[in-house]
Structure formats: C-alpha cells, structure tokens
Image (tube, rainbow, N blue to C red; front, side, top):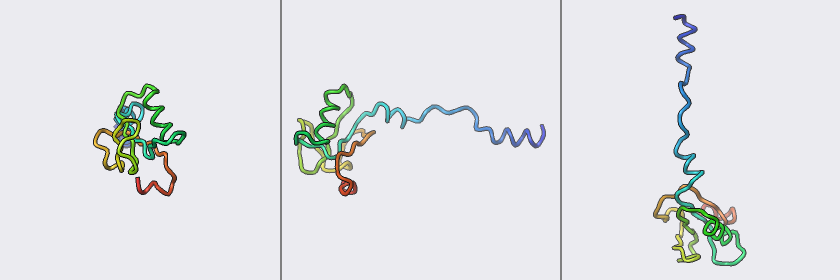
Length: 102
C-alpha cells in the first residue's frame, strides 16, 4: 500500500450514518409548545392551537402563556421551561421583544 492509498483510507468517512433522531423529532414531534397561545379569537396563538388540535396532529400540545391557566381546555404553562413532557418543537406566536421572556 502506498502512502497515497493510506492517506485516502484515513480520510474516508465510511458509510453514511442513519439520520439522527432529531430529524424524526422534527418530522414527527412528540410534543409541540405554542408560545403565545391565546384564548382571544383571531390571534396567531389561537389559530395555531386550533390548527394543531383539529388538523390531525397526534402528539401533545403545550400552550405557553403566563396570562392563562388553561387555553382551549389544555393546561397552559408560564414558560417553555415549565412544560413537563416531551417537547420536540416550539412555535412562537409572540412579538420579537418577548422572545427572551419565553
């Protein structure tokens, strides 16, 4: 084996690995938090919750808004940090200046 063949073998990354679990989590999230969830009609937070609940999503929906205890009959959490279950995706329905509070 020549030096060139050795260098080629050492730089070969091998077989392509399986996609990481994070891809599955993105495509089929177990839980989705809706930050800015709202009980107010026609708000983005209210529409996102309704779409998830009626659109066939099979995972757990976690409304997040410190102003509510429940939204659409779901327990509402003050912060993403308070969500108790698996959380693979977060949808933000808030103004950019509130992102750090979420």
